[in-house]
Image (tube, rainbow, N blue to C red; front, top):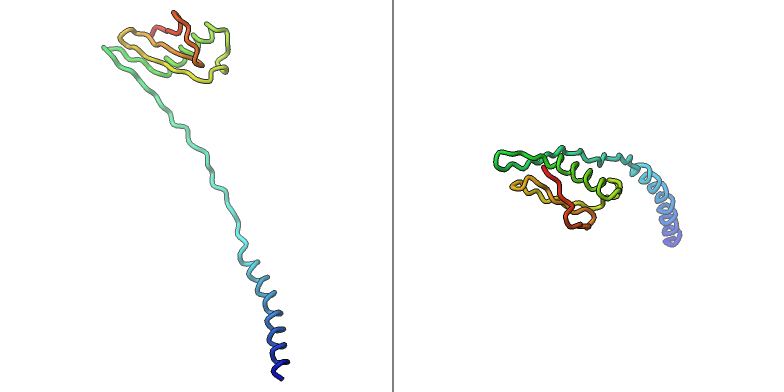
Length: 110
């Protein structure tokens, strides 16, 4: 009799296990919400002040880009790297665009 009793316990366990699995699957479903990862653009303005003069770096950048496009005949979209050296004591800015330095050029007056 013990053998038949063991079989009935095994059958009972087998029958209840699938039911529990279905129930668990239904309760573990979650809705995933997306969070916005957009960054807000920060408005920046840099001024260089020297000997009673004030220079806006954005104005200098625009002037450098314009001078470079006029000198080279290339478009502003061709710029991959730009370095600007502001020398307020000379009221000038020197620049290097895409690693190109041309003697006597690459200077704008402020």
